[in-house]
Amino acid sequence: MSIYARTLSVTEYRSFPSFELDLARGVTVLVGHNAVGKTNLVEALQLLTSGRSFRKPSPRELVRAGGPRCSMKLTLEGEGRVIDMGCVVEDGRRAFMRNGKRCRAAGVRGVVPSVLFCPDDLDLVKRGARLRREALDGFGIQLNESYAQLASTYERTVEQRNSLLKEPFCTRDLLDAWNDSIASTGAALTVHRLALLSRIREHLIDVYAGLSGGEAADVSYVPSWGAPDATPLPAVADASSRADRIEAVRARIASALDERAGEELRRGITLVGPHRDEIAFTIDGRDARTFASQGQQRSLVLAWKIAEVEVTREILGRPPLLLLDDVMSELDETRRQAFLGLVGGGVQTVITTTNLGYFDDSALDRAKVVKIGGGSR
Ligand SMILES: Nc1ncnc2c1ncn2[C@@H]1O[C@H](COP(=O)(O)OP(=O)(O)OP(=O)(O)O)[C@@H](O)[C@H]1O
Image (cartoon, rainbow, N blue to C red):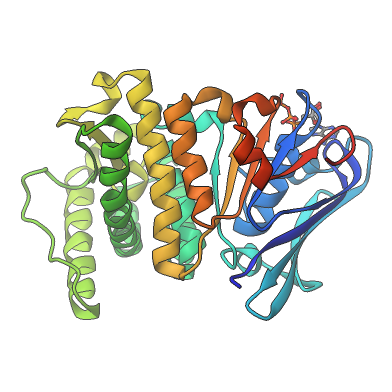
């Protein structure tokens, strides 16, 4: 049996003095009124599977108001293993634990990765590019530790270069000294992104066509460093062509940095690199950000999330933990069924809702329903 999330327990965490939640191997529905803490539980599950929270809280925000510390533990079980992933916040500092031993976020990340879908995601297509980059990276870092390390090294490098750019003494020579690290780390990160996006794309196209009755959706990577008609990058077939690909991107980032140095010095920010790249959706060849209806944009996001589930299965050989926070009310019947269909495919799922009316009887019969703010059913 593949590894899955069995029990979450939290103490002095957000709205909970203490709470223990046994999860079903299939679907667990958390039902309760507004503000009873359903999303808080989803957040803990995300934190203990991915090492991050979509709410981006400061450590103190995780501690129940007035308390000095909080702790969370998620027990994973299967494949002959039991692993406890933990997180403790004390004195305003957050520490992760694996089987009781302190570790970095990487220690809890990715054994059972999670795919979260919450109401904020519904605007993913039309909001700023940063959110789409974060969606791709947040997924990628759970599947590949080198992706995670590159993303974090690259972020630090850009921060340092931007700090330098804001200094009155910053000169072209001082700036150029940073270009190598931006270009080489940025290129390696970009190649990870391109590989992951191409896997997501394959599923997204099929899923979207199924949801829409045949419309052609697509998603592409629009780099900050190249004209769209630039020579295509070498295809990734093996490790050596991967190295060629990184070198090709590195050279383009380096030359774009060179070209735009004057503008960077004037504006005080780094204008080239993966932190400025775009992930763009189209439907029937038209830019989805400006042309797609709200329903089409939602279907694109839904297709993206389903693609994340399928790509996890492809790469790790097991499905992720799917966390659906408060989205049932936002989706119509077809889209709800698309998600519930995944569940039939053996994806462990936690769904929060204020209203069980969004589920048909057969779905509820197969689910474990837990009332939050009351007893379990
Ligand atoms: N650190 C904290 N200490 C105490 N309470 C907290 C803390 N953080 C959040 N809360 C409380 O948790 C509640 C929100 O919980 P949550 O967002 O999980 O609700 P929910 O059940 O998902 O609600 P909805 O159905 O409206 O989305 C709020 O009442 C908020 O004040």
